[in-house]
Length: 304
Length: 298
Image (cartoon, rainbow over all chains, first blue to last red; front, side, top):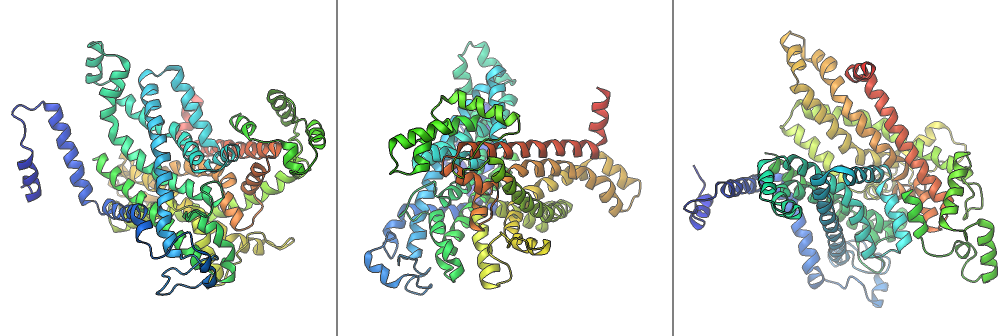
């Protein structure tokens, strides 16, 4: 029994007359995965949360009720508690916390995506090369990963960011470079199990060049672990970037970044002003949980 | 090594950083001469390593005191916090992980697994501010700084450390519970468990004697890998709770370009990590006769 949706899909994409068996299998596997994902509650909830924040990041500045960067007149109603006028209250400069939380999604999403992407591209290339060639490069890379893992990420990044000066660009490069060897290790493991397979052997016998074998033959077959690793790393990237911004090494004021908002406002917690801290904190928590739910859903779907 | 190279990239002039922007250039040069920071990088590194090997960590530029004097109290503070957090989180997480594994795939498992995953994913400074709000502000039961007044007794110190430790419990619970769960699932599936069940042992005994012992092995390894983080990665927590641990020390040293302090503190974090890994290996072989026998044969 196939569902109506599936029949529709089949009708729209008739199976070719004499399909190359391998491609057909791959497509079936992909469709099966998508079906599993669509039924996975964790994935759907995660995707919904990420979608909400993506919406905030893209359209936020256009739809928020107040200017997140504030105006001099705002100072008159600073530190107002949440009300129907200001859903999340106002901060020390009288800026609307709700507007700032919505617009703040932009920086953290952009920076963490860029950093993870950089790490994934570098890491995939490294992992393919080391997994395919093995040897000395492989050994060296694994030792570098070990060294990275021995020192907490926050310390590495702190030193690097003090050295290079805090900015969005530095943050992206530092996180990307720290992630690259870790992602490389996952890719390498996947490549190691692929390189002994017949299709690689066949390509080698056809006298294909090594880069072609790595990127055109092996890479498409290791995308599943790369996608999973990417979402897992994205979660860590948000964790790290929020923490570093909180420490003052990321985007600088007056950006409405969430980590920065907490940094600016947690000191007045003790005086009872909880709202300028609570809402950005909840936003960070919701976003990382969303990304991790997606990663969990993907892991389960790809492991079947 | 990596950190030393990175530290050398730090821009600016150490003498200038200490004396401030208005000091005369001659004074800056003279201070650099005294501190030895005008020499080449390699000479400085050789000098520092030579000192470390003789137990001398050098002199902190920013605090103008021997690094050891600043480092050891901070290390002791970090150790207190780490110990308290581990004492709470390890039993809770192991029980949680095993409980989840015994009901694999059912509601209890999903709740513990996803809850742990979510708690772990949330940065610790977010837990910290939420914790301060709930326990410090609304319930008003716990102090919001971690540093107990000097000379306070053991229980007071624990009370002051409870809130930061609680944040760490949230962050670590997921990791440890996941490993405990995976280990238990594997042990439940193993032939020896089947044998134990088939020979008629009660479920309790099977779990205690056959499953738990094997499921705890991976847990030890993951606890060890988190020790480095517990000692050095807590910059944000220590900052929020105003606690003088290694994390905050590294943060300040990096900001003030205090190389000897920065390097020594990072070195100590690395050493703590190595020692923790070593202890984990020893524990591992004590708990696992297979490894013990294998190594004595070879």
